[in-house]
Image (tube, rainbow over all chains, first blue to last red; front, side, top):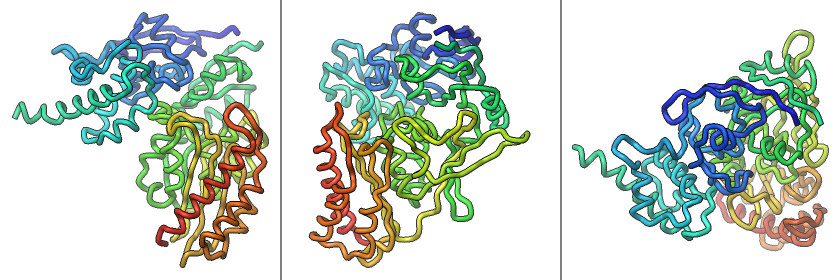
Length: 165
Length: 290
């Protein structure tokens, strides 16, 4: 199949990006092969595993199911963009301290999905965390440490303002 | 194989329908079905690719004059989060809650799920039991023309609908359910998330004094299209529910469906599940106060 290209511009991890992409290309392929951001993983290519989870305008989606041309004018955050000036983000630090990574392949997707849960509602139950990561497969951890990590990040986010007051 | 020669991202319905009128096009919104289908060659490639995700006026949930209207581009996540729908038509929200995963719900649209026309399509079953209509828009005589048809007449086979090449599904609408309406959606799969339903069952009707005054039943993944269970509806109305009657009604449901065997389940198992889900659903509804 031959396919025309389209020039698109969007914000990627805080910086402006302008690229031309074949119009049928998906966002994951653009991120990994064209923009060389390989932190976002290709697992299944069908939206089943969540390894390619990114934030688009702050909302978690599967990059493998999104047309790259639809990124035009939008704001993308990948795993490469979640750390802050102080270093790792709250969610990243919680994954480290809870030992929630093993082989690490699902980790970027889980951290992005965890970050979106944290952004969406600061007060969620363990049950809601479990429901929240339904779209992310992990074959190593058995999920317990992942759930612990997200709960820990939520806790430290809740207590953070108090520390400063 | 055809090539993609043109890409458009219209921002209004007049703009979109005029592009559709110019020749064969593939539309996408969330991309959750179209991207993987194109990747494996399961969807024929048309010369024009249209990104309809930027049409703000096809997004949103509203109510006026006793009719609920959901724009075709409303995401499944927006339906799940809608307090108004939760209150008046919870059966739609129940289906949204077991739709795929959080990431897919954020991108997938109601119109996309309907037009993909899977016999197992999760959002179709609750809309069938709410007597929904689809509104199809196209460009005719220099303006946007709209036609409506009942959702139950929209599907013609797996992946096939009555929609014409130059049409887009603009909205779905259904009457605001009457007071004392109960609605239930259940789907069966090997895990709660991201599963294509082995079978699914929907029920909605007005229940007063332990008895359904009217009822609509729909089944998913038991026929080439999602279907209404008319015999089950007839067996259910004006009957005082008790254990024996519930068992009888579930048997009618079982006899009404004729599923196929495929990779997800055998015909026998699907038939058995319809009876089981129907029976459990009716027991649950029976035990719930009107």
